Image (cartoon, rainbow, N blue to C red; front, side):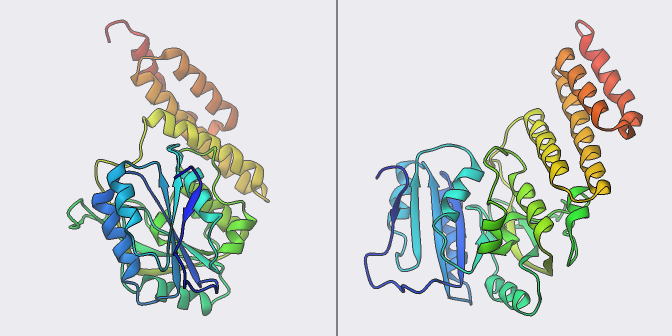
Length: 312
């Protein structure tokens, strides 16, 4: 099959648009993918379709996907790009539902997840929603909660901007039109792309949070990742962009402070690599955006000095 080819049900499918489109990207995670797909099939709410975007998986995974029950499942076969935002956007382009829900190939949903979120959205004026979640290991065993707390209802922009709260990918459901209005995922954002999406959702519409744990996020050693310096540099880009989108001066100032904070993290990372030039540039970049982080610079400068020391 060629890149972008869509595998659909042979015939007899319901031509009416489903209420919910489930977007599920995957790449060579068959040991977890089976459980993720099964958790969608087990939903008490049944008016859904699932679009699985395969980012160039190996033959074993593709063989299994070809055997996936075909009535409500479509598979988008893609050449491998390693860009999660691009893969999800490719699936979003095929979504037909009034609402879109996101699930990663290593995570799981509770049986009533879709039903409870839809009911909450129907009983409010919110255009998107999220739930609480727990964490599981590779054997589906629950592990210590940890991580950031979810924000409350309504306007969740400030806690998300300040990283005092966070929203997990598999907990979100949003109007498809709302996702179209904000332009989907930013494909230039290789890290933090989902937080970027949530920030732009929060800019556009109020959210409703469900405190009940309806999703399980898996912790394992096969997550999409990169070095911390590259990730923090991408988060610097995120906050620089957000500063241009904020409608009020205090929010723009918060974005610039967060950008400076990320620059400081980049400087520390570069110093730990003994790249004094890159660390200095990152510190200078942070100073341009916020002097409020000056109190944190002594520690970074000490690491920078150590990086300059031969044999340190």
